[in-house]
Length: 400
Ligand code: ATP
Ligand code: MG
Figure (cartoon, rainbow, N blue to C red):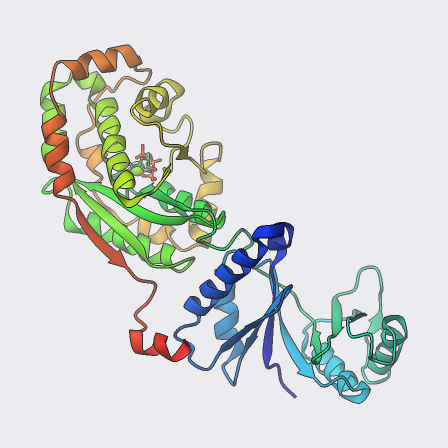
């Protein structure tokens, strides 16, 4: 006997009423996309469950992939048998004996198929007894068992599962619209992107770079970080903005105390233009209240004033240690801490205003005309598409 299925539980999706169908459909597509380099695996779905048929694939490969898919609450390895008492008994015993470090268990039978002759309660007892007789040093604990052997008797077959593996939670990426993530190459912005995706949002990325003050390595970092983020969703488009000329002009013409604020305002203006062109309705940043001069309440107020787009700031109230923990967990941390030059730090004045007044900022911007520089910058944006992995289109087509 062997595990041949993975049973996926939708979790939060079950709350979504009318949208449920769309959500499940999207989750199905996302799972299919994630498994496209596992040619033998097949996906089947029903109203309240999704199954992956392993077809001989090592389950560990698929388990690792499933952990990264938003919209999955939990999942389990499952055995599928015909609705026959002996076969169900054998499978339940297999599931229990495969689990490690188990001293106590509980059997939970759900009889969905009412034509099955033994009801749930009686079947619980039949199976409990069978497991006790055929194992050693294991007892029943109905309140706090080490493991729960689940038996679902459905119309088409019976599914037996034991260990529950925690999924990524959240909503399937693609069910909550799109946001443009401002990604610097630091620790915070990729974590902000990850958390936004977790709520079902698809991302595009925008990065401002200032060659020759910032190097190709800095740009490569952003590409590598984006590549990590693709493993939680789909391909991600990255817009690389050549920011040097505009930054130099700001540095030359705006009093230094305000140049950082003006530069950030220009970043938002450019981001808004890109979002508008792509039909994107929000921006996402890694801002965190009180971390640096640009992230005080006054600073955010002065910078935010250039746009009406909602700005998603998932990290706004988090502690740095919390952010680092997530960065490590999603494996962006080691990329983020590679040494690099950030366009914002290269041009940072020695004493930026930490509490800039909006009227003053507007006044200083009024002495210089940045419109043409903005247009030129936007016209020269380079756009690249980052794909989840190196699997080829051929491999993908096999699954369709
Ligand atoms: P991060 O760790 O993401 O760099 P941070 O705490 O260092 O964030 P800042 O450098 O002040 O904070 O940047 C605040 C936010 O502004 C970043 O999280 C990011 O969303 C955006 N940002 C900063 N620099 C850039 C850049 N060069 N390109 C795109 N976005 C940027
Ligand atoms: Mg930074």
